[in-house]
Image (cartoon, rainbow, N blue to C red):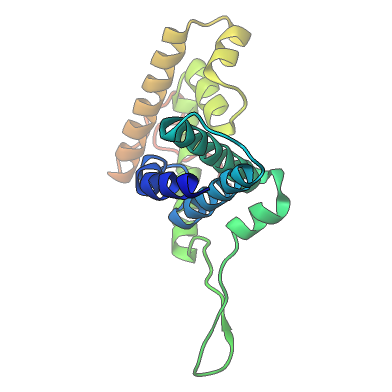
Length: 197
């Protein structure tokens, strides 16, 4: 049991640094504590290890397993854990004794700008080719992955990539021209605006 404590203490900082990209620091420390307690309980039951290297490997294996459990819980397998992960702390305002709950959504000005951009994109879509509209619709709508799209429409991956790149570039060009006040040159739409939302 003393050997478990020594190895756990010696490997702690290294393992927490090595897996820092997986979870927040406090969650990693919790996972590490759980893995260490599991090994101590195993040692109390008479579990044996071949040596410090074997013990360090078992500790890391259990630590990674606890990290994976935690990530699964946060990603939605545990509805309680997922809700806690996205919860907003509530702080009381000392002056009025009321709760001050921050609004994490976009502000009114940002919403207006996004809606104007969306309207502009909608009006400019007829200026794109049918293939370009199809690819952009699949990407924006999240209808399918590139591989599924290609097999469904009989396209090569290279064609899909090129059409998507050209569609985005053309749309950026049209939006820039619109902001600069240059009239659209789409067929049948010279100097006219499209349908409003």
